[in-house]
Length: 322
Image (cartoon, rainbow, N blue to C red; front, side, top):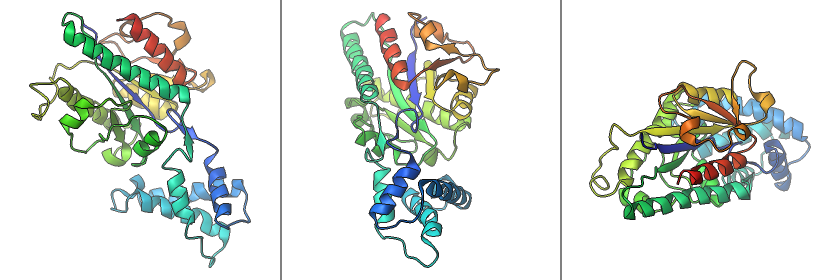
């Protein structure tokens, strides 16, 4: 049996990137820069939690369904966070919301491990080199590796990842696919599947199924003449080794496994529920991915200490299979 194509997807917040400083602390800092003061970080945290919850109830999915849009939705959250702290009747600084919106759409508010970014570059460059080699050696099959993001988030994620130095595809769920553009570019992130676009959130399997649908369409484009440019989907026999990497056990691990994905939990061993059976990536050693996640078996979960550690191990694992 040949090696399967690999669909490797990541959670975004907390897995690929994280706030440079706690969100409430950054909110408080920006507010003070705008001339608003008289509150603690703890007060901002509590007020933000209340504002976020209220806005989510009134306008679910970051305002997408009501036509509000994410920018207006977050502006409401910011105003509802600071108005109680400023006091009724006091006008909030006009530049407060724009500055916070900008910060949390970019590397100003978030960070990505430089090594993790480099590893994503390496993974995709190696895959491109393998496909070029396969064009000259038709007897040696190299699996495609499609890297994506599946996240409960609004539409800021692509701009955040791009700002952090990753080569980011414009392909989002619900967008039209441009075969010429997608097939000729090398991206670190090939597709984005956000709850904002899908209308469903993890752990609902719909968001995982949506990502697989996108991967099937992208694979058809990448197959070249006979598919690209003709709107054809990948063959029904497309076989994926699906791996999802996340830092929340309930939403990420359990949600993905129920959708038929193998999973990698990035977190401390103590955060794994006692009744759950996981394997530690350090114990897997030189075992090939196809043996760790055999086709036709029940989804498996492995635990890694960090996204960086998992990527390093994966690249070495794939290199051994060349």
